Structures are given as C-alpha cells and as structure tokens.
Amino acid sequence: MRCPFCSHEDSQVKDSRPTDDGAAIRRRRQCEGCGARFTTFERIQLRELTVVKSENKREPFERAKLERSIQIACRKRPIDPVRVERLVTGIQRQIETSGESEISTAAIGQLVMEGLKALDSVAYIRFASVYKDFREAKDFEDFAGAVTEAGKQ
Image (cartoon, rainbow, N blue to C red; front, side, top):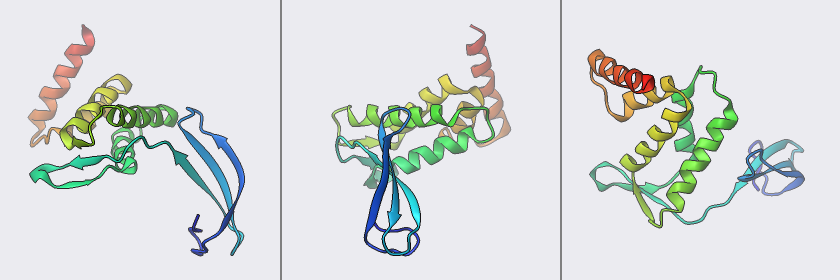
C-alpha cells in the first residue's frame, strides 16, 4: 500500500479489525519509508458496476461519491455516522446483488431517497431538492408539505 505522505511503496500492517457493521476490515499501517501511520479500509466488491449517467455517459461506480452525497444531505443533522455508513453499505449491496452490471443514476437516486426517508426527513428533503432539481421555493414547499402529510398518516 502506497504511503499517502511520502508515496513510499511499502507499508506494514500494525493492526486489523472489522468495522462496527462488519462490512469492511480496518487496517492501521505504518510506512516503511517515513514511519507515518495511516488507516485503510478493505471492502467486499461483488462485481464491477458501471453507472449510466445522463446522455448515456458511463463511468465506474464509486462508493465514495455515494457516501459524499448522503453526507452532504445529512450535514448538521443529529444522525449517527454509523447509520449513514450502514445506509451507504446497504445501497451498495442492493446495487451489487441486483444482478445487473449497469445502473442508472436515477435508480441510485431512488435508492438514496428511500433510505434517507427512513433515516431523517430533513436530509430526505435536502437530497430531493438536488435529485428532483427544484427550481423555486414553491417546489420545496410542495415537496415538504407532501412529506409532512405522509408523516401524519
């Protein structure tokens, strides 16, 4: 594993343990060149996934992009980071076990919407504002009203 500090090619694993949800292995490493310590995560990847974007542009699935978009929606909300990690892992597993090697951004967005709806209504509305491309305040108002009404039932 290349050192993120000095780019030395070799590092030594000092400690390995599973993450809280058991979906990854956390490894503490020490660079053999500069002695710096850093952490890496090893995850299971069932298959290579391709994301089909607008205008049929294709790119490899990146877990980090999915995680980043969910974290942005959840920013400054009282949501345990472990729950966000579980949501990301759950969505990735759903995509990988779907049997398809390609998935559209719309399908990923829908999975995120479903997950955020169960997690936090504010994060759900934040994500929806980007995903559904709200153009004006009325769009927000209508969507938030529908969420509020659904929550009362």
